[in-house]
Length: 403
Image 1 (cartoon, helix red, strand yellow):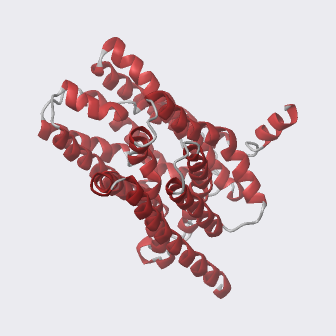
Image 2 (image 1 turned 60 degrees about the horizontal axis):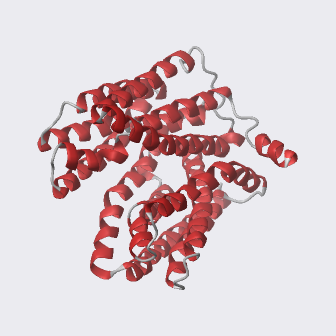
């Protein structure tokens, strides 16, 4: 057990202190967005809005995320990642505090749009910063550390948010969200100021290639958008399946979803380190991750045994642990030959688009066709994703042969 513990710690070695600080800032930032999981409850219970209104507000939420990611990439290429990250954290903090005073439907649509626009400018800038603060051989593990921070933030945020709501109400939630974002910005200012932070991989491209003209990257983006659409079903339609088909309680559903976070926390870094040492290609690993995720849906239709839910969850979790870090590392590698902010913005936008369409389409399919047919359709979408990643694998292989 002791040897296993030290082997686990060894997988974190070699990462720069700047990456660790960036992970802490990301953790504070993500834990600080604790109002998001309670948004639908706040809108219906406190503002007395209809569910149809909430649907429109969530559409503006997604639209703000898409435009924010695009704008963040543009500004990062023009002004640098540090300034964009700082202004995003500062602006998000102020926006969260102001949102508690918005009480109308139109006002909330506008407010949530601008809030997400400012907040998601952070993502492409953060990815470019991560690339700069990491040695080339450590980039995938650096991404994995950031993912751990995000997962911890999303796990801790709702729990703390629930306590804040019950003790001081929703107004306190907006204040805490705003203050945590401002604190993350202050930490960034103190620790990762360009005069203090050490850049390990400074990329200067004389004649940058536009991400929009990179055909292989577009194939990759379509594959990732499809992967995101499939993966996100686990956080929208799947909990309904657990309750309505397998009659799980809220506690059992929470434990099953919590299994995903626990396995990621314990095993993702060692798994990524082992796969990196295995000399596999990033495109091949993304493909394997997509295959495992596809299988997690089709196994649900093979048996009514309740244990299949754990099998499916483990298949999806392992697929996620492989696909996400290596897809992120692939995007950062690709960005070296062009405008880094533009590349990382498009990578972020692929998942923002998945958020806009996947939740709603999954719900509509379940409502009209039932769960079994929905899982078959989701499996079909996953197969389409696998086809695009296969094409990408051949395109990357051909590129290497011609260089």
